[in-house]
Length: 279
Image (cartoon, rainbow, N blue to C red; front, top):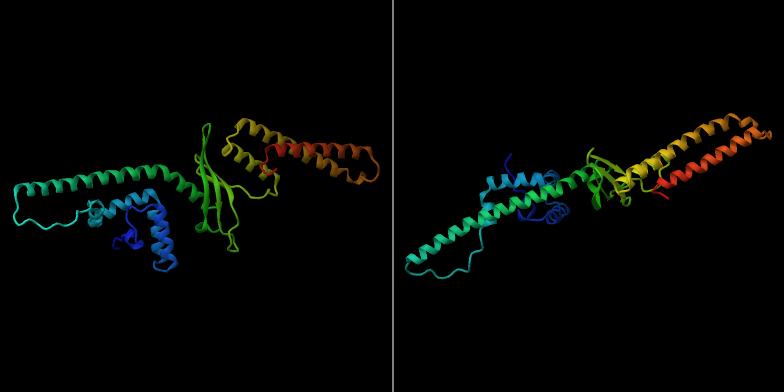
């Protein structure tokens, strides 16, 4: 397959920013001036710092005229050539050639440095976005907001918000997410309180530790307290259900168990509220 100059395909320069490339891709797609395969190739190549760095190296090797155009200094306005050349003119031309070579070298070094910095800075963000997109029904529609790196002790996380199209086609609204760098794992935080209380507690604890930088031991102590009370609540509920036949007989045993159960329910709910981010 022949090598394709993706920058020329989009009508942008090799020095174009990510924003300029995205804008060009959107315009080409809207006017149906680019195929879907080429659009995907541009996205996967030019919007990934590591892939773009490798692609630029291949582009300059395959199309040296691109590098020449990129590094060639602007020529001064043309002036009538002198009728006769002299040694001073010849020396000036040699100096201009040397200046062009040195300028090309400095520009290449600058591009390499910029590419390296961009790779170091943007690579984790691309990993975060891709991990979150894997959890979405329409990953290509994802829009990200306020992605931030959070260091809490030995853990490194990326927290932010994402908005994507739902099954019916409209955007469902911003939803928080957590990305755990050490496990390369992304978790979507439900926008509304989860039906299962265990999910509410564990998601809340994860967000507080990873994104709010709260003390791990303190948060986990509260989670364990809730787990203990939840276990007691389940046992009390079983005991209460086993005495259901005495509910309307005025039995003191049933009343005692019922009061004990309600007390545990209240304590369990309070323990959950101390952890939950949905209060």
